[in-house]
Length: 93
Image (cartoon, rainbow, N blue to C red; front, side, top):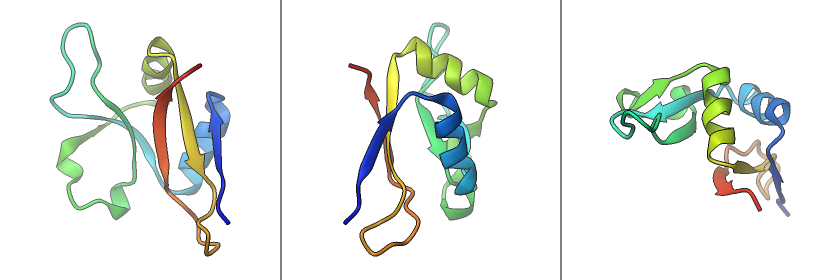
């Protein structure tokens, strides 16, 4: 059985992403003067359309993450035991 975890702990999020060769990113063309754009944790080695993503620094990622009061829901392993990349952002409650 797979389980999910919800957190806004920056180090846990960074560690989870780093272990999966993921990078902080935003989707190109989604921001404006007041908004950095849609945040993503991007897996460049597994993606076929890397041109849609702009890698950003973790500091910029977490600044936007906090400004939008987000949590990350993520999964460590799939039901079959494989490493999971499942994640999504949700509003913090």
